[in-house]
Image 1 (cartoon, rainbow, N blue to C red):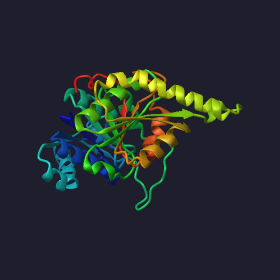
Image 2 (cartoon, rainbow, N blue to C red; image 1 turned 180 degrees about the vertical axis):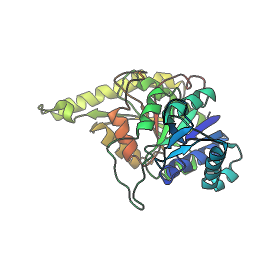
Image 3 (spheres, rainbow, N blue to C red; image 1 turned 120 degrees about the horizontal axis):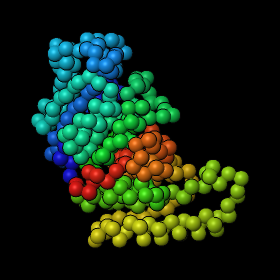
Length: 307
């Protein structure tokens, strides 16, 4: 299913968690892995001077510098590269999100893997961030294939995908996410959780909802899942339907943790389906920043249909 994977990295410690997932998946599923680094942003036009994305310094790009960068990447991932022979190192100057998207299209990759941010964290600690990185935002909104985002250290994925949570709000955008979750579950024999969190947060500000009304809406949501998604499973019966109430991103993270999920799949944005102007939706962004497993952001059905 994942014939080609593009791992977008700065080759810095902030990408270590994503690197572990990328190499593990490539080895486990026999995928071709492209370890891709955009080393700098041109200072003007097609100038040979670029601003290094890691150091912020202005450097001159020539064959020697490119060779040095690739050698540094090989040293950084030396052990992983030795264990997975179907890997290639690529580095070039440019605007990071533009080059990542161009490379993904040119090489017709099935999956892009990225960390949630490229900013360094204090060693030995983890801080919740209020927003994902700008490069990730730009890639996720325009990618034709799913983007697998690693926000925190993960352990559950090391055994391969076996327990998938598909979070839906019944929007049109969620259809592509459902298709991806279903295909992964069917291909790898996973349990698929069809999950909806009924929102009782600020959307109901000023209104006190009776518990009976909440429960009626939850029953209605369960029926929606049965009508919208179950018929499309086409004989796949290893699934469960779960409806919880609360703040959606909190409930999704809690449900995934309590059920030992190794993948959460959500729509990139629920307000503007397939719009390249749409930012990563607030719910999926908060899930990315808190989940202890990878989160797949799905924006388009282009690549999924032929997987």
